[in-house]
Amino acid sequence: MRLPTLLSLFALILAPSLEAQTGSLDQLSPFSSETAGTSAQGASYNFSTSSLTWQAETLAGFDGQLEGFELELTGSAGSTIKLAILLGSAWQTSTPVWTGNYSKSTSNTEIAWINVTSANIQMRAGEPYVIQVIGTDTGMNGTGSYESPVNTQYDPPLFLNGGAFPPEWRIGFHTYMLTGPSLTKVGDCGSSMTFLVSGMTPGELVAFAWARGIGNYVVPGGRCAGIQLGLNSTARVGGFASADANGNASLSFFVPSAVCGAVWGQAVDTSNCLTTNVLAVK
Image 1 (tube, rainbow, N blue to C red):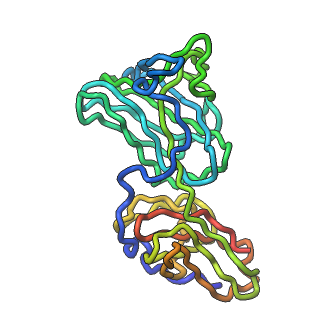
Image 2: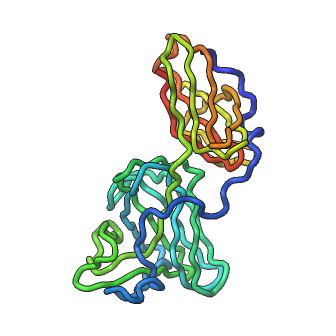
Image 3: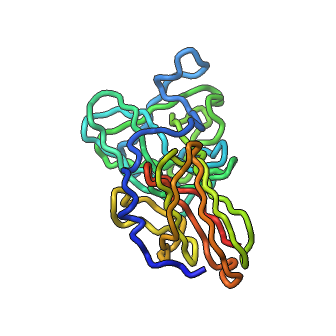
């Protein structure tokens, strides 16, 4: 298979990135506002002081792409925090797979929706990761729960500045996962192969991209600018197909044996900019 010339995957993907939560609720550590009627009470956490780094450990409850998370925040309008997602259990010192910021728009309590789909974080059920919060000395706080002697509202631990926080305390958050779309194949190298995509938007165009390696190439332009592929910078468009009424699409062509194990593929739903898993061609 000869990788085709880049046809501008990035300009042809027309729809904007998601602006609100659409995935399935995965993990729930209750906010202060959610503790009524439970054995816990509401609690406040200092998200303001820049010398404090919080890491709330969590995990993926099922396979899919991490869509994002919610926090319950208090403080004045304009106060900000720095956020990150790190893979692995806390205390985690690896390079974040996503970073961002949040600024409060009002002085009221806010439920902040933090969308991380741009990082294309594909998770397996049971895989741990960390939600990290660092203050900017602007007066923001987060909420959560307190229960003595051990918090039974959420199991994975909370860490502060490298050490485990007392077991009574948990920062509140809700995480959301996208369970599709997915890319699979039928056939073997040296013959005709069919690449199948499910979970796409019915009737919309699906773009198939190919690369000579996996990586974290960021789409540089178009309405989906900023989404991160699981392919490296050799990514090229290999073709397009329309999803049927069930959200399925396919693309078939002859694949020479010479490319076995040397090419990877990924598909993009052009209506919402969501990506599939990365698939090795072999």
